Image (cartoon, rainbow, N blue to C red; front, side):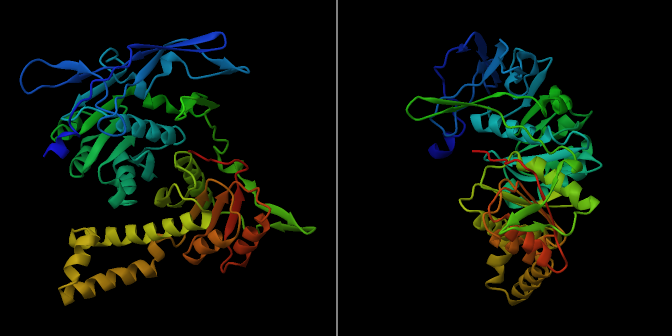
Length: 433
């Protein structure tokens, strides 16, 4: 019980209410955000973040309130454009926090921010992304928000459990009913239609954030912000935020390379649907920790591999997740139970053992849902092994930055595939550490 209590304890932080950062002639002023703490007995009080990445770590969220950074003629995001950092009691007209058994922690805020970082590239359609440990578990877009959320959840139900949901359209009652049946830590949306909030508030401990500026996320697609990394010795590394240069299908480059005086070129261009999935996948890839690859089919991720140390290894890990996700969906849709429960029960029940084998065979026949999918990689493939692994499982088109001395090997791999697969380059890397 004491171990569980630590996750509810709100750590009093000693960080100052005001923070100033001076860069050359520009001083940026930040104010610490505070949130309402509900008490079973006594009046509500205000407090900062519950804790940092772990219980026992003090943490505070600051909002930029004054100062404009401009470097080399580039205007960085300013005080009036706050999103997650505007979540506080002093700006209810812009953002609101609802309900809540638990107070928000550092990881809640950074997960929501990661979701917004992906959705800024997906403003044209209703879209949903589920974030866990600062990485997307699943992402999808569709004609309705409910369909987008459902597809994002089914993309990886195992990883999505306890995740943070971020959407780019107001949540209606039908979508709220679906969300309320699942274990989610956070729901963030630009608004909630009549009745939807009441449904979500029934869930104990669910944190619900309304960020009105989500409907303006498109404006953030080409904006820079100051990215600061602290070192263990107290030092800092400053960098510009990354910028996505692939915002339309026509931005992809033909996959071409030279080797030993010979020219190599991908013989098949992606179809219109494949280009749309590649574009969607590249948008999601902007929010995945490198080394990473992901698979997309029909506007939704099939599997996401994040944080690998080698390219072929993360491809293989993502393929394994695709098979697991496919099996998980069959088990839940057919029997209403997780695949691991079925595996446990099948150990002592011949009938369930045969059922499990049928489901596993269905996953193999569908190649984990990868048949007809596309693959996106945040960096080039140093060898063709990762590309060959994906092609063996039914991937039909691939996008990666290009730039390896062995690009010709990957081009040969898609040309030699039967049927031929397609490949395009992005011309830019999407590392995220």
